[in-house]
View (cartoon, rainbow, N blue to C red):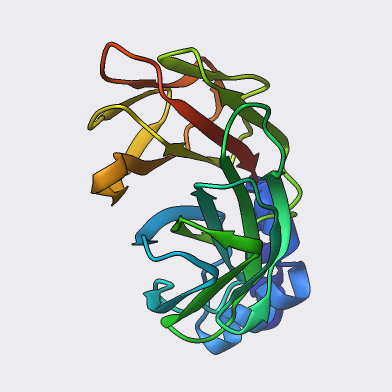
Amino acid sequence: MIKRFLSILCALALAASPARANFGAGNCLMGFWSGCTDVNFSLAYVTNAVDSVDASTFTFSSQSFGAETCGKRYIVVGLGGGGVAATISSVTIGGITATQILNINTATGIASRGGMFYAEVPTGTTGSVVVTWSTTIARCGIAIWRMVNPITMTPTSSDTQTTTSASVMTFATTTIPTNGGAIGYIYMDDSAATRTWTWTGMTENFDTAIENADNVMHTGSTNTTAGSTTRSATVSGNSTPSYIGLWAAFN
């Protein structure tokens, strides 16, 4: 009788939220028996880190991954680097080889590169993020988000942008699905002045300098409200710096 009752509860829960389908009815029942009820999609910004020392491999040690969960936890990393043209060779998150979501490995007239990667990291609240580039670059920054119970890590919509001549970067194809969320990341290199960023259609998570001497910085954002609207970021200042951007939605 109890099992039947729990089966009905699981069926109702899975029907109410498509994102819970990834958890599965069987796992849902096991969750109830074990006390785990974390079956919903969630997305949250955790932290960011920077390194301005020239290198080809950047190790960001003891980074926060957020709380463990009985659901499926993915750590998403947005990253950027620059100073010279290079490509991202590999990324590991908590010792696990990360899978690429998006990348900008070529950008005409811009010595900036970037990418978005993820790994399923079931245990541990902290760990290292290691970014390896094809050659020595001048600097690197990362940002970390915690995502739980997505149906898939393939974005429902995504976009990459590069510019050397605009103070506003507007992303295209930016619908956030029901029971989902989105991540935006921008890396700016070789700026002529200290900048600040203002996001539209997204909630800013951070706005951090990577190398003050060259006015290099990065910024990130999230949104978990379903719908279609303009998603953009505006950089302060009169001159127009070079920068790259990545945006992806999940559910």
